[in-house]
Amino acid sequence: MKLLRQIIEAVSFWIDSVAATISSIFERTRSHRRLRLVENEIGAFTLHLVDGGKNSNLPDQRVEISNGSIVEPLPPKWLSILRGSQIELVLQSSRFLFRPLELPKRAAEYLEGIVRSQIDRLTPWTANEAIFGWTQPTDAPNDRINLTIATTARSMIAPYLRALTGLNAASIVVSTVQSESSAQAAPIRLIEQRVGSAVSVRRTRAILMAIFLLSGLSAAASIGFSAIASDNLGAEQQELMRKISARKAAMRNMFEGSTLLTLEKRKQAIPSSVFALEALSKVLPDDTYVTELRIDGERLQIVGMTSDAASLIKLIEQSPHFAHAIFFAPTTRSPGTTKEQFHIESHINPIFTFGS
Image (tube, rainbow, N blue to C red; front, top):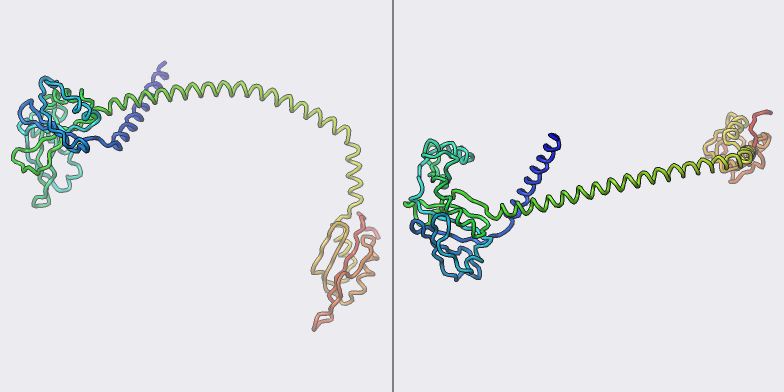
């Protein structure tokens, strides 16, 4: 039971990981409408459409949030726009604690870990109790950088996140701007909460679970069908092998005598190339050189050099292994030598001894 529980937990963890990955990829590739909810005074906000497209002329909407909920319901038009969008919640700087920080320039690659480790020292909260962000680092003398950390208690923004979660937005980004910063200063991004991704993960997980269960059932059915088919195939194979063995035995008994006789006759009727070559080497004189030799069934053709080509015909026919020796091409004499080039063809007799 313990092993089964571990397997189930491992499969569940794997499905959760795959579902989160798929949902993350889907969320990154999906384009969301952007809205900005700017805090004008405590609890009072202005909702503005940043990239409205066809709704770009839509006037801003006043929103009041109290005790984790929106005081007055939003118009249906705004509710439709908010669904699946990205909301940037810009809170007043008075809610945040700002602290300057000077670091070595090489620390720019590890800012998140460094800032997290400094939260306990610079603020009254721990890293888990606070949300925090920082400005874009600027160069300072002596190969250092300056930046400003903005932080506040996580419990302070929880009611606002809870109120916006019910609007079916895809994600909520919390940011702020330093009061002394210029109007063009980039907001300090503190946290992003993906609302729609959790629903997407649950939906993806349910789909993966269904696929996994269907695959398991299909595999079990396939294994059962394969076992049944394998048993039937094994029985048919054994029966077929029995019939083949019986047929081979019958054919062997029927044709064993005639087959051996046929092979013996064939052996006696077809000339042996080995015997022909051995006989040829015995009859050719020592001053004769064969440059080409071809054996085609019962026909032998040789080409070479000798001092007396005409005498070769008689020597070849004196051997019982050859008959009907003739020149199949003219005999020629090579310039500057006494040798003649001959082309002789002969019939090979099927004799398998070298007796005289």
